[in-house]
Image 1 (cartoon, one colour):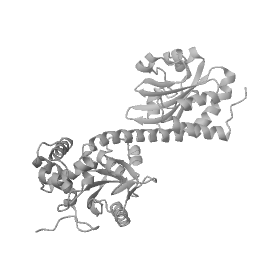
Image 2 (spheres, rainbow, N blue to C red):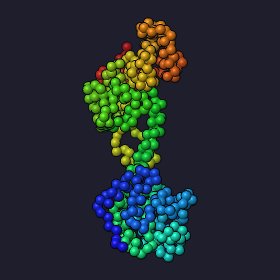
Image 3 (cartoon, rainbow, N blue to C red):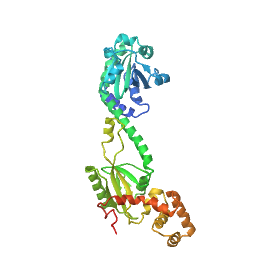
Image 4 (spheres, rainbow, N blue to C red):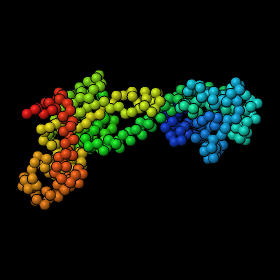
Length: 400
């Protein structure tokens, strides 16, 4: 049997599969299946170990049972240094490949329960473990078993090892990326659920105004696309050219000096105030490598509100509370001090219709009285009251 020799295209394909497979559940499946095709007589296994026991998570052979996955298997042999091989490779750098052919005490290995249970009965003899990550006393490996048939072993062992050496840095990097993105998705899911309870519309962007995510009110504001919108290129854009320039300038300023600031923009229903502030999710509970990946891009949160003295912007009421256009008009009139009778007369509607609309406003905002409604909507003024910045006039009302 001739030694296995991979073409450049096959090797490139394997590198691509490594990155694709790192994001699958179970991880590495497509990669291991392809390796078995390219290296006949080999078997692929993904496992983690804790102390001296291995816990398989995926195998493309029939060796691994459900019971073994749950209970694990003890590595009851030693290496050439008379130490447990798992403890030694735990200290090795990620990407290290340990080979039974080179580092394992043969007598200890072939007499071990591990070899008699998982290797010999299935026609395997040599194995090699690629370490892809470590967290404390646990480590993750991609393992390959090699056939005990002398001809197959001679044709596959060394080519498999040389291929793994080329693939090792990609496997390590792929796992780091997969974990970082998984944690990011989980974090955004949790943060997003919390942010949806925030009344103010909030949109998170990069320094180039690229959209990252928004809370529920922020998503409605972008969908309406009156003051700002999500463009096809994935950036958050102001509808007015002057506002767009001011917004871009403010983001550049924040990238240089990450201190919260404010901006006032125009709107057909009345001016809006923006509060721009650095957005930094807590990453203290992840590895430095993952932290570096997740902090490559600075993020900024944009809160939308109004300043004291501005008439209530009815569009923002629709974005935040899901009010209809007429309900928002009624709400704005109530906050301006009008009575239900005055609202009905000005709008040319029946008093009963207006009262029903007032009740709908109370239900959607979650209040039961006019006083409570005023208190609930005062939060919009907090954005405009925080900063007195450039833009279309001061954000803070002048003192009387």
